[in-house]
Image (cartoon, rainbow, N blue to C red; front, side):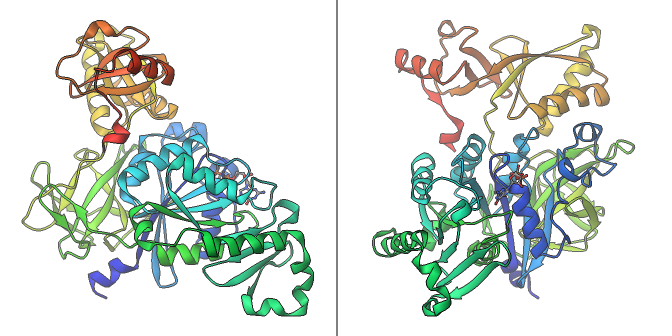
Length: 522
Ligand code: GDP
């Protein structure tokens, strides 16, 4: 098979959702389709203990969770599926965001009983910023939830994206009867015994469906579908690919119901790897020379060996064992002899990989997040990974002032690695670290102690709303503890507002100050 044919087969995506919306349940069902697991309930250690393999770092064991975004891959319908996990519970971190730079599309799960929740919104913003195609699965139809129209309206309003229902539910909860599959022109009938029965529209005339058709739920849904067909928005694949319209599927991950139809449609529609921008030009995924970038570094997967694994998204060419590449940042040649692919919790050595695949490469402490690796003579770098605004902030000091050298070295390296973000109070040496999720602080503290022998004190200054200042001159007198003026790693001035209210109040009082929201700039 040619490189181009291999690339066309790749479907690399992440599932985003708020905790408890059903990401694990849906992932398990997909793994069942891929024959990767025999029964549901085996993905996360949190529930079954199986994921807690012994060689993950200590902190993972203590908490019984996985810090890494794992990657699952399997062949399906002639395609090669790569699912990237986006950790969401206590382990929500910048890695969760960065993972989204390595995918070609996203599945967003929404709990029908709750609608859009905080974490979904945050992750969605990042997808939107990057123009990633988004497919929506509205889950838990087997429970009494919100009205379908109301849910679609909420998506359109809160997330500012058009919706197109690919299917339409008939009832909900106890009255749930199935879905009209608008795409497949069939009715998918639900029953708790058989789960799914597929009835092509023309067969609905058969007498056996008379009872179903008499129900109020069926009649309402059938009217709604006619309304959608006549007055609803047009479907536009072009808009889907630009991330401006999301195809919406209703179903239940647990039953499972509607999952197969959803997945088959999604996998057909989702785009294969696209060309990617670099500092020099645009690289085609079927370009014969290998290239890729590192979006995540996992330290100390095995505490005995202190090894690190860098997760690389292949963007072009073909990866083979012992491939010789150049690290674009330094120009140094590296032989990729130890590379792995991840299947849930297992790590296997891999022989080859193509654009869209994620590989784990052994990191002898030379890589940084965002690094580009290239084969061939031309050196170039993929676009820098965006900086994601942290929400939680803590002041950090060394417990033992005599050990300030280790303290500084540790902070410098961990910040460079992307484990945490560093700020300083404006024009002082007082350090503040920022994170997207609480776990980042725990990992930071643990690693400072274990790798740099530096005991640290972390003192919370709470949740903050950061805004970068675009002005040449900063008026220091406008700020105080409440709206704290700090500088980021590069010395750019940033205000950490106490909350949205403080931010808005400040904007009213000082419209002349140019405040930049990183989410909106990129
Ligand atoms: P995650 O936190 O997003 O990974 O969510 P889980 O997959 O762990 O699901 C959270 C809870 O919702 C679990 O108790 C699931 O059994 C339940 N759940 C998931 N999908 C469905 C569904 O379709 N219907 C119902 N009734 N419960 C569901």
